[in-house]
Structure formats: C-alpha cells, structure tokens
Image (tube, rainbow, N blue to C red):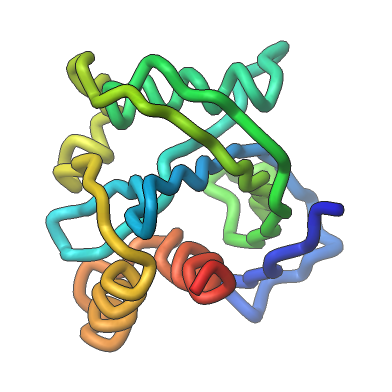
Length: 168
C-alpha cells in the first residue's frame, strides 16, 4: 500500500485555508543495482526525474514524458506507486495565496541507456540538470551539503532529501 512520504511547508506563515492552486506531479525511482538514476544540478544536488502532470494526462504517461524530456530515456516501465509528498508554498498568482503540489513517487525500470537529447525547460537548462547514476548514500551526502551551505537551495531539495532518506 502506498504511503505518505512527507508534508513540507516552505513558508510557515502561510494560511493554508487561503485561496489555493493545486498541481499534481510525478517522480520516478529507477534503480540499477545500488545505483539510482537522478538529475544532478550545477549546485551539486540531486533530484528525481519527474514533473507536472498535464491536463488529461495519466500519471504514468506524464512520467514517461518526463523521463524522455529530462533524461533522454524513452523506454521506461512505470511500476508501483511508492507514496506521495505534499508541499505548500506561496503562490505566484495574485488571486491565490497558497500553491499546493502533490508529488506521486513510482518505482520504475529500464534497461535502456539515455539516447535522446534532453528537452529541458529554461530553469532546468539554467540549473544544468543532467541524468546520472549515483548511490542513495552519495546523493544524500551531496544534498545535505548543499542544504547546509544555503547556496543554490532549490524548493525541491528538502523534499528530495527526505525521500532519499526513506530509501536509504
């Protein structure tokens, strides 16, 4: 049975009963032996492949698209739902106070190697996101070091570090 992996409030002054915009996202957990496919950034941190689900797109279809776009990996089997996280942030749109994102983490499998060029969004390209194979422990150490430094801390860093800790 899937479990709740964590709830994160980035700004504790938020009124969570205020006008809220919601977004659903998917994340892939793909192991090969003890190596996990993650995206590294120019800051030295790691995040799981994945992103927002488009209107009328299934969770599985969104994860296939995200692996192809972010990792250049077109052949991924989406498995069981591991669990979800919920994040609350300040909304960028004036008519909303709260942005709530629910991320669903799925086990994934693939024997393919990245063959397609990445199709990154502008902010992803600016962060120089690159797919790489890394152990959970190495990714955890790197994320903790970036968190401790306070330099380049992205909104996903706390969430992804918590999920890595659950996988360790």
